[in-house]
Image (cartoon, rainbow, N blue to C red; front, side):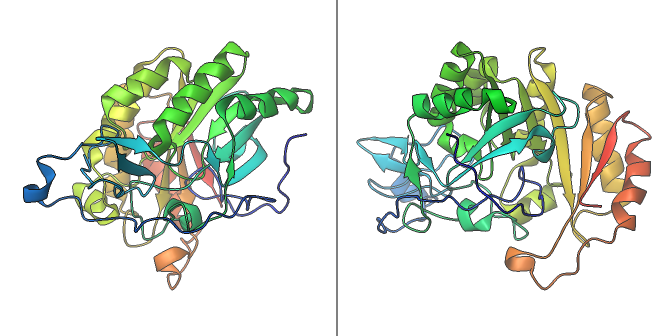
Length: 321
């Protein structure tokens, strides 16, 4: 029986608020996390992580920025492999995916760790966590695929890798997606897009749909969240160019940070240059994490910005309004 987590939470920009995992194994704290890995003098002899543009080079036994990958045996490996913190059977619309298999369900699975540090993160309890900070249970790829297959009579069409940033656990996503495809199940990723072209190319043949968070459309905004706009644009472009993967894009509209009409206009124009039919979600921010003292985005703001985005895009949708 698929584990059903009760108690819906307000949807955010990372595929929905992650449900708490019931009956999870509580793991004792491990080594110190989130080490400094940018000192040039100490990087030279270290393995470099290939997953994202941070190119972390942690010392042996230490973790990268994402807190999900660790230096071990001369390489940077996926420590959160198969460590599931959140599991729920969700409507695809919650990812959000508005134009892909409407009405279907996906088994949504999340782990811990993220390679961004958004002050408005709506899943910070797992995205900012390391192995000893959050409860998790071990699930092998075949076990997750079996759970999704078991839920087919309930309308489940596949697996969504979501809640935290899935690509920091790239190897688990790749291995599970391959098995899911063999079992006739679909694969969905909900990602911040901060993944290098090589890993993305490895998993892309197995992906059926994706929603990418376009956090903002300026380098200053990506400096704030600790990311790289060009990498995210490359990811969206690669997904858009893939004829076998449906792609949608989401921007969480945060007052005073990325709610400028000119910025949304530029983002929409760029998306339209890829494909004017890309569904673009503009979602309201609600106070959370390090911005718990901020007011929610006024309902009028995304509505006004949608008018701007529709100058370029055919399908602009509102979230949390």
